[in-house]
Image 1 (tube, rainbow, N blue to C red):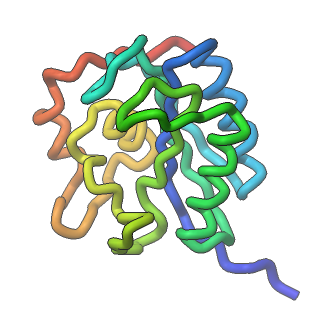
Image 2: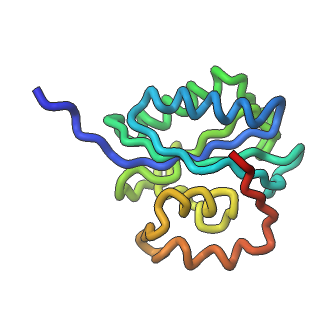
Length: 161
């Protein structure tokens, strides 16, 4: 019996409460349970459209047998396991997991939009995502690398290993 087919998905990982670096690393370890994983470097970024301390961010590439909605459910369960609360939009967070891409899926439902609608506007997503997939092309957006210049005003620092 052959293993189920796997889809290449990208997940944005971030935290800005508590020991954010340790939380991101622990969350990445848990994400590896969903399929083979590659991970970008960690980045420090100021909150964008949010408040609170700086974020620690990364992007994970996971090859998963889960459909997009099922993967989203797993990500939200993982956020809850790390104490994620949603008291208001853009609140500081113990863990934030965003499904950025799931294969070539283009989807718009009340629960999930793919590709993530703002991924090309955020340095904290673009830098680590392009580290893993430098030639990534998206329908309607073209080469993601071409969007980096528009995020130049967003402070971002690649952290040492």
